Length: 516
Ligand code: KIV
Ligand code: ZN
Image (tube, rainbow, N blue to C red; front, side, top):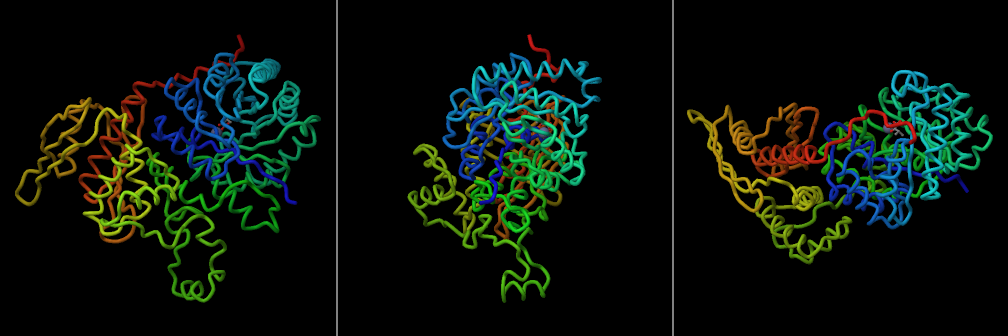
């Protein structure tokens, strides 16, 4: 029997650290349910000490997860660990994940601590976390740039203090696969009690090597991989879940390991994360990119028709790309909608279903075939963001040759509908100017992207905006058959996310490292 590799998903924590990818509690819970269906062993739901909003979101995730363990991240301070435990304690399988940097550059310039002090902080943190739960993970931040023997010393001390998982992060994405595998081997051979814990790796993708480094580490003895869906995360992102899992699945002769992942859930999970975070997946992204299974060259198409194995190393169905994605139309009823949504993993309350059904009918009037992506957009935007401050209620634009582009906008807020009108350089600009004036936003638009949600001329337009207000950055996303409406929805969505960030300020990372 091949060895099991545990999949630790950090989409809701490191993934959320992608610029602008902030999620509210409802969105996190929705992704968490999908991650459970995907079969992740552990999900890191957030960093509870970072903000009140994140604390509440981790609590909500902990309350719904039945199978996956739920981890909360904490620095080594007691107050961080108290918050992490406060947030995960009601999970069926709670985990506290505490971390401190171990590289000299971090010790000297960031922590201003010496090596002994860091060992002491790590040990105290693990012991304190252990007083709450048996399942404690310790991470040596910047582990790949740490002195090898010191790293082994810290791990040995953390395991002796009770850590059941020790994690070796390549925090800055600096490692090279062969080198990283050597480091893992060294840790396995020079940490006397390493077999009392699971060795984990957590790689960032700054050099595009996160998946390679993770696989090399697994071959060298690591048995937990820390990953995110679509590879989202801090800077260039984290190791992508789908790449690591499918590499092991597709090449068992070379990578003789197994995971608990239900591979057919990979695409639905990828789509949901894209929908909710607004972070697009590049078309040529392995496994989940729009072109990952598209054969363009005639010779390839011919080969695939004769035998898919000529050019396909994986079947699209294996990763959840269904061939008959065409689902519902304007004659479909509430029951068909409910049951199709359930097949897609969305179990909605009667009230949510009623709300969605109205939106679905409205869409089906404009678009002949409503496909999974359309439904996912309706769910992610229509249902999940009901606690938003503003929603777009009305939009009328007039534009054309010889006409000064004008927009009239109705925004619903606190039960009232406010009306406003402004001019602009074009209809989208006019709509944005109106919304900006009505909400009083001082945000700057850093990026504006338009794409089609699916193929076909009746595809819905998908717009993402990236807004900055002070130090806060938020992505906004809107989907609608009308591209101007999609743009207005995206802008309103971005402004709502900035409002959320303003109400839930993330604490400054001023290194609360000493244990009281
Ligand atoms: O990249 C990193 O080092 C981290 C740790 C908190 C595990 O995200
Ligand atoms: Zn990280």
